[in-house]
Amino acid sequence: TPSLESSHAADRGETHRLVLPRRIGDRPLPSVELVDLAAEREKTPRGRKLILTHPLRRAISKTLENGGQTILFLNRRGFSTQIFCFDCGHAEHCPHCEIALVFHAREHNLRCHYCDHTQPPSDECRSCGAPDTALLGMGTERLEEEVRIAFPRARTARLDRDTARRRGHTEKTLRGLRNHEVDILIGTQMVAKGHDFPGVQLVGVVLADVGLHHPDFRAAERTFQLLTQVAGRAGRAQTPGRVLIQTYAPDHYAIQSARGHDYDSFYAREMEERASLS
Image (cartoon, rainbow, N blue to C red; front, side, top):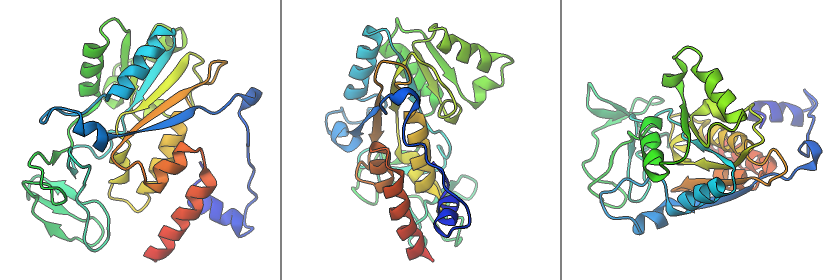
């Protein structure tokens, strides 16, 4: 997942691009399935926060039955600073820059960090009118609680910035995953790349959209990179891997490209988007 700057430099002949077209041992890339949160929301009682959808719960149960391990990924960056609708997935964006607005509690307003546009937060969703539009507040701790309730017999661990502060916790948790002493690992970017755990058969992305709404013009690029990287944790041994991505934006090009493990199509589309902004 090279940066757009690196790929553009290669296109211009300033650097030479080297491609690794296959996994080691010709192992297949994991299958990637999208779970449409808007459709799942219609099946969920109103007022209940949608964290683990039925498709993801079924996939975790099947993985446990098969003796495999699961990684649940939640990109917490930006949570509690975004206005987000749990009914339709709408997030507040700047009317001038199309960049996500950030909530500032002291001034109680939404602000664009590019053009300094400000506006008051709405009590209801500006897209669908739902009254339960809220600051995103669901993090890995809340996810861990949900997992322990849904799968009480599973050995569950959490790895994020908070738990990593405990001396030796990161090494102990990763060693437990490698030694098959952990069935479900819940984590943030710390678990997304660089790890090779043969027992991991399933990766679940709890909410892919939060990265898309980060107030940065590189939001789509970073979302594609993270989804591609965390998907690569599944199926690194003989058993094929499976990835489920929960999202309110299943048609977004970053998510569709990640679904197909297709860097080239993402690069071409993102270059078009960048050109339109210049």
